Length: 360
Image 1 (cartoon, helix red, strand yellow):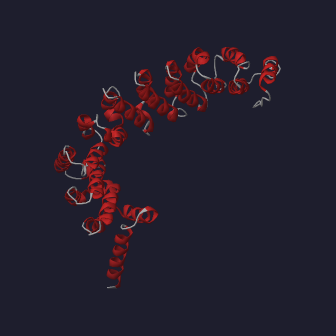
Image 2: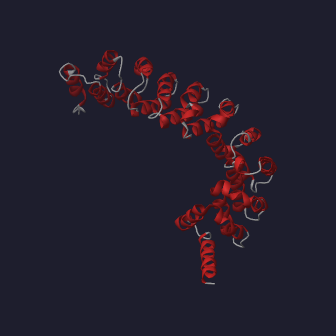
Image 3: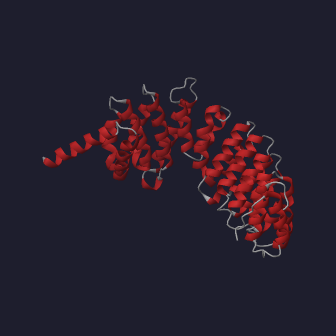
């Protein structure tokens, strides 16, 4: 009897925890997710609670359960018609997350495929509604399901509210949906191309070959798309040699803001790939002072063509902008250039612009 009472008290505490927001809710959510399928009874009650906040949070936790949340699909489907918009949205996202984490080998494959198709059908129907209720959540739910469900988003991509679903879809698709991602990077609407480029940069998997995907996007006619691609590449620059090469070749872009993002990514690299040095040397004189300073520092990490890098850096020590002179000095230091060999240009630089601190 005492054990039963304790269990009931625990369930009551968890229901109250689902009524909270912020850290209090997250504590309860972590506890329920850790319990796996044993949390299903609590969530079933919570999805039918009279408080919208509890129903919304229960749907959120159900989605985090992944495949363990399959018994909740029926209640989540009913929640797509909830009076509260936040509950509808959370339930649609939960459906997408649960189906994304499916494992046919763990159950009846035929039944599972029919369940997946049913979820796709329900979310597509909801996404096609002209009214706003639950529509955004339905689009995000489809996106979270990954391939092939996310490909159904094509008919909605030109709408402004597709930004988050596009992010979700790219992150869920991964290498299985590369063809879809490439198609979205060529979408007629520039916003879709920019959203997709940004999401590609956020993708955690290295197998997606971000450098190859976004290298061509740097030649896009829309400046917003090029900036999104440059920022995405800069975000990934420390980890991927193909990304660094794409950034170096992308310096041919026309806009100064693009140059700055690309130069920042190249500066942050631990070492420059051998094929990235020549494009940097080629475009160094043509970029603005901010980008040129960063590229000078990047050249200090070159492992080949060091003589060419030194020859390119020495003239920059006489640049009018102090920032460029500092960048050139840092680049020379990175290449291990002897101070006495570069002394005359450094003296001229100090006389022209005041104090110059060398990072030797």
